[in-house]
Length: 438
Image (cartoon, rainbow, N blue to C red; front, top):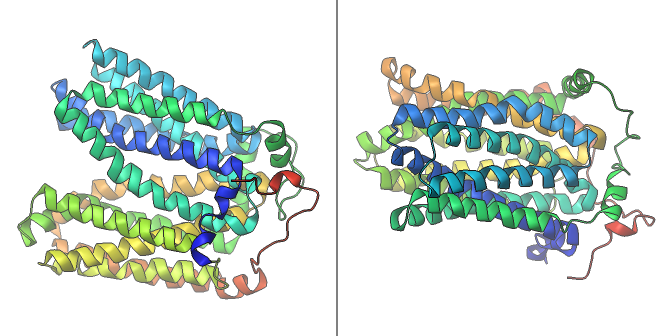
């Protein structure tokens, strides 16, 4: 049954351990997003102080994500992920103690946010590079679909909601203690990852991968990742499209949408939160549905066209004065973003050589994040001189055009025909890739 396809990765013990730890960890990240805000306010801080702490997290993430990709290619990914969770636990436990003793200061929060940002920079390239080592190729789409489902539910909805209850009924320090508990549980679960068998499988490499190269310098490894990207048209043009879409879309949605809600719909923060929740639900449902299907034969075309056409409703946001119309537009945008992202993550794991996967994943992460602050910084000033409806119109039209430019510039239609990704037979000598009994 197609519905059971989404559950096939759970037949593998290592995936069950990994997704359980990831789910708890990102739930904690969602709690931190709220707990940190109200701890800053509890200390008497305002927008400037909150910006200082949030910027510390961004600096840690963007500043170290490329190094995280190189580390994922050089070091055992299991040990790297466990070390990251251990560091997260140590710093959040310290922040919790300081908050409970009422001796916490703003720089403690900023330092904690910075360490968590660095942790994300190392965790997710290693996680992405690990999946092909513990799952058959035909299960990667389902695995990425499950991640794409649990992330918006736990990080964008569940975690913030629980933290909000703890802050309202107790104190921000208790919410931070909840974050520490999440990292404690995730750290404990990750220690159940297989050791000898897992490391042996990790060294085998994928079907596209050559033998693991000898260790080299940091900059040589980084250059190798960039060169591979530039010489791989489908990868290069997808990253170019992603970079431009972040620049044109993130700022208007994050910064200007609240003013659309206020001025065009007469709504408040609750309506804004509801619309963001609708977008998150669309992304989660689309990711789950994608996990039940096989990778499309025209996988590049489906991914790029879905992303491009899914941006079209954004063009009308600045002209809408109805909650339900705006909700449908954001639902479509979230769903198409979720579907395309699941396919994209699977393509990286299926087509990028194993010894480069950490670096390419981190480069993807870097490109996706690098222009996000720029987009949000530009949205406000541009809206002072350009009507908001024009900003959304341009954003919603530029992205589909760029999607089709990328599709043809990279010859993706020809590429996907010449590189079919059909289900691959299991290596009879790879006993540790066989499903465990559930």
